Amino acid sequence: MRIFESLALRYDGRRLLVLDQTALPFREDWLEGNDPAAMVGHIQRLSVRGAPLIGVAAACSLACHAMAGSGQAELAAAWSALRAARPTAVNLMWAMDRLRPLLPRPEALIAEAQSILDEDVRLCEGMAEHGAALVQDGEGLITHCNTGGLATVGIGTALGVIRRAHEQGKRIHVYVDETRPLLQGGRLTTWELQRLGIPCTLITDSMAALILRDGRAQRALVGSDRVAANGDFANKVGTYGLAVQARHHGAAFHPVAPFSTVDLACPDGAAIPIEERAPEEVRGAQGRPWAPEVPVWNPSFDVTPVAYVTSLVLDRAVLTCQQLQAGNLATLLG
Ligand code: MRU
Picture 1 (tube, rainbow, N blue to C red):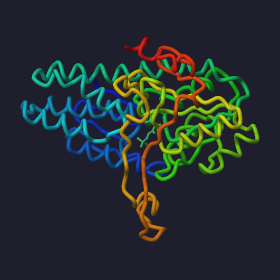
Picture 2: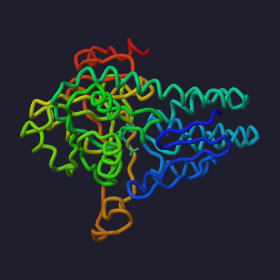
Picture 3: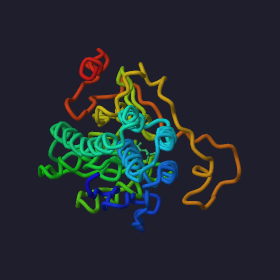
Picture 4: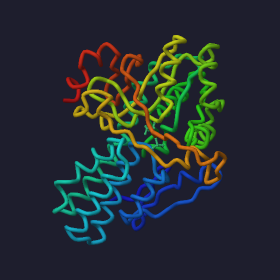
C-alpha cells in the first residue's frame, strides 16, 4: 500500500492511523488500525465513522493484516469481523465483498484495498462537480451529521458539494444541525467548515424547521449510509425529519452519495437494516449521564422515503425524484 494522508486516515509505510473522531474538535489523537480487531473497535466506537471512510479503513486494515503475513484462516476471520462491524453503512459490505475473492492472494488483496481508497477520492470529486452545479449564489444551505473529509478519504459527499460551491465563488451560508445524540454536526462539521473558511451557523436539530420557515436555508444537502433501489435512503437519525420540514417549507432536499452507497438488493427503505446503539448515548453526553435510567430507543439512522427527495446527487449523475421512482438507479448501476 502506498503512503497516504487524508483528513482522518493515514498510512506512513508502516502504521495505519485513524483520527479519533470521538475526541474532536478539541484533541487530534491518532489511533493505530493495522490490527483488524482494533479497527473493528474504532469503527464501533465511531472513532472512524462515515459510510465511505468505514469501508476504506476496513479494507486498509485487512490489507495491513495481509502485509503482516497473516495466514488464510486469520485473514478470513478478520474479514468477517470487519464486515460485521456496523450494519447500516453498505459501503463497508461493498468494500469487503470486493476483497473476499482475493483472500487467498494477499498481493492482489493489498492492491485492491489501494484501489478502493483511490476510487473514494475520485467519487467525491464526481459528487462535488454534479452537486455544486445545483447550488445557487447567495443560497443558505442546511446539512445534517458529518459528510466531509472526516467521513471519506476525499473531500466528502454532501460537504464536498458545499466545499466545491464555495470554491466556485458562490456566496453560501451553511446551517449545521448539531446532530443528536453524538453531535457529529456540532463537533465535526463545524470543525471542517471552520478550517475551510466556509461561513456557518451551528443550530440544534430542533431549530431546523425555523431556519427553513424563515427562508434562511433554501436547500438541504445530506449524506447517506445506504440508498435502496427505489431511492429511499438511510442516513443519520434526524434526516427524515429534516426532509419533511424541507418539503413543508418548499426547500430543495438532496441526498449525496457515491454508487458504493447504493444497494440494489434492497428494494426499498424497509429492507435497510438500522443500527440501534447503546442507551447511554441518549441518556448522557460524552460519558456524562444527565437523564435517569429510563428506557431509551436509540436508532442510529432513519429512512427518508424517495418522495421527499428533490434529486439524488451521485458521483456520475443527478437523478430526480421522478427518475428514481421510475427505477433509473437500477438502469444506471445495474
Ligand atoms: O454514525 P455515523 O457518524 O457514521 O453516521 C454518518 C452519516 O450518517 C453520514 O451522513 C453518512 O455516513 C454519509 S457520510 C459521507
